Image 1: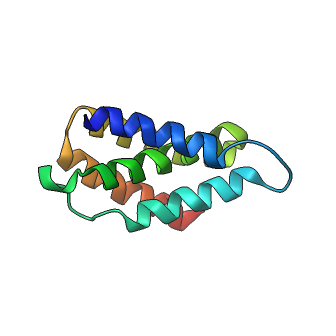
Image 2 (image 1 turned 60 degrees about the vertical axis):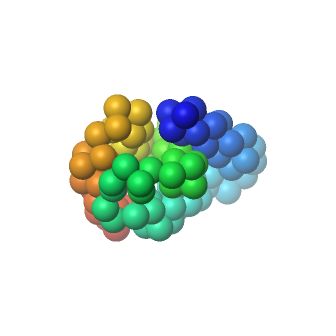
Length: 110
């Protein structure tokens, strides 16, 4: 269920935000991903991994990966987001918490 929600979140973000048109899409995608990673919880317990937080993470992961795909300046962000996804899918919640901190630190450096 949770892995499915993560996948749906990624697909939703990809269809809603990624692609199409002018400006610096990579910068906008990275900023949007960072905004979501800033809003998700700081600590992760089984009850923290709700449909809402899973969808939020899925969207942020997709946006970070889109940014990294479009512009090499965001490849570290994309790689870290991929690690968050792997930690969620394997239900390694202590790793999710640390990786979210790492993503936030990367976002602060962008």
